[in-house]
Amino acid sequence: MIKVENLTKKYAGFTAINNITFEVGKGEIVGFLGPNGAGKSTTMRILSSFMPATSGRASIAGYDVFEKSLEARTHLGYMPENVPLYTDMRVTEYLVYRAELKGVRGRRLKERVGDVKELCGLKEVENRIVGTLSKGFRQRVGLADALVHEPDLLILDEPTIGLDPNQIRQVRELIKNLGKHHTILLSTHILPEVEATCSRVIIINRGRIEASDTPDNLRRQLRGAGGIRLEANTGKEDGVVELQKIAGVKDVTVQEDGEWKLFLVRADANADLREEVFRLAADRKWRVRELSQRGATLEDVFVEMTHAE
Amino acid sequence: MTKFFTLLGREVKSFFYSPVAYVVMCAFLFLTGCSFYISVLLLNRGPTDFTVVQAFFNTILFWISYLLVFPLITMRSFSEEFKMGTVESLMTAPVKDWQVVIAKWLGCVIFYCILWIPTACYFWVFGWATKAEAAHAPGAYAGSYLLLLLMGMFYCAVGCFASVLTKNQIVAGVISLVMILVLLFAGLLQFVMSDVSGSMRDAFGYFSAIDHMEGFSKGIIDSRPIAWYLTMTTLMLVLTYQVFQTRKWKT
Image 1 (cartoon, rainbow over the protein chains, first blue to last red):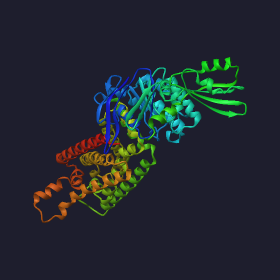
Image 2: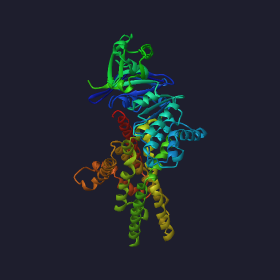
Image 3: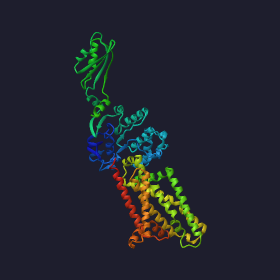
Image 4: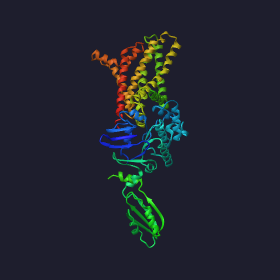
């Protein structure tokens, strides 16, 4: 659905994105992550034909965004960062205007505007002036605008920025539902959101792609990622010695709290040792009150990949 | 084409969303009303060799209000889109750049024409009250309003060009006012330049809006000013289009 090859964008004096290549297939929900100034918005603006790249190619639904820009834009629903809207129009009026601009006509126009108002929860504010709406509603108007012409592809630049936790949850649910019928590329700083919604993550830093994989794989790849937390009363036994004998264990640390001990068992990457640890504890008749896998979070991955050297 | 009319509709309507339009309309009607009152007073003094149409369109009050109105109409057209960031949603919709430029310009021209509609009543009232033969001068009316339309098209294009240069409305307004005043004063140079050749003076006279109005309000429809305003409008629109496109190459 999206195809980006060797895309570079230089502004006077600095390179915003440097020779990036990636693809997004039909039906994927891809999270685009990176610190501020990493080049996320620049990439999205190029994909939406808002500005041209310095070199390289990009296409949407098979249409080159430079040469067949109009066709590419027809297949795209784009929600820019901070959702710029005409603040002097009413919600319905604005959506009708946007739908007409995107070539929706006649009976379908009325249907689509009604549908997106329903979908984005705008019914209660349909006659309000956009300028008087709260941030959350404006965000939803932006999303409704991006959806109104039933595009195959949605590009959302920070769709949940500035929303309260309830609104974030609502927008996240909405995006998840949209993912059933649309391909979505979204950028965000909120990592739990990506873990909750995205099937794949692209991490970009200083204009380069650092990683592109599923959130699970990324976490697994992280050095020393998998770890087990075991809280047990081992009686007279030491515990650490026995645990270290399990194949795949890298190291074990222990904290003592009276007769209870808290072991942190770090495993090699890609290993899940919970069963082995459980069997050991059962064989040795340790009393266990907690056994859990502590996975690396996406945040760990993000920080690992993008922190300044 | 439907997209173009959607854009145009939004441009025309946007004038009436804000109170600015109504303030401009009231101020404009007040000033042109004064101008009309003065021209009627002039005619009341005794027999003259000019008609009410000529008197109305050649007062200083008319020119002041006339030239001030363009920066007010046009300054927000592009600047506001840049400032609010709405240019991003606008240009990522499947519309062509030229559609946006022409729609914005034509929107200004249409609002400008709406401003002028009430003034037609002045002449109608004048004709009805005086029952004077001279008030029925279709040539003078046609000439004056044709020239108003042509000048409006040109000055709106100048204003749009100023607006596309900056995201600050005030700066856009000042740029267009200066450009319009320079054009007006260049036309006046012929009266003060006594030491230059006749052809030089003719050249300046050729684009003097005041000269054009003097002729057209008599009902003399000259093709030279028509050509001048049409070509200059096209030139300004082409420039606006070019600047609007380079805007995409910056952040």
